Image (tube, one colour):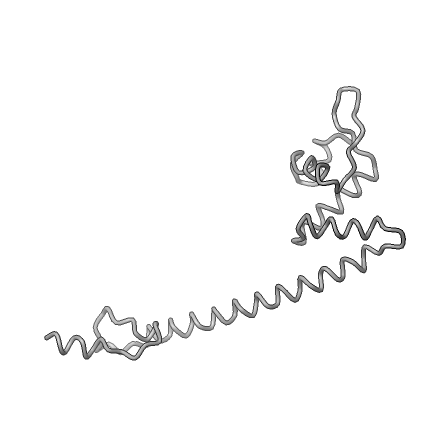
Length: 143
């Protein structure tokens, strides 16, 4: 299969496949008579694997580590990928928790802003800033 055909079938660009070659993730393919890259069945399977791993958010460095495990005698890609995914789950879970805390804080500030009593000056945002309101006193003093 030629590079353009493989790229189209994987929904990536030929440049992406050349990058994978440069990084040693897939073997450099044989060249057809016209000089075009002609990928073997093994290279096609490996490229599909790499694109699939990228699709689940893995970096090229992480994929390289997985492929080293995969290529090692007795290596288990499934076991190695399970370890990587377990780690990613922990990281993403922490990110979700942080984002949930930020969302809760923003919602509380929004509620405090909307619940600002009408008698306060229109520029009063003290509730949203979690500050004791001094706006009403400042307005009375300046009058």
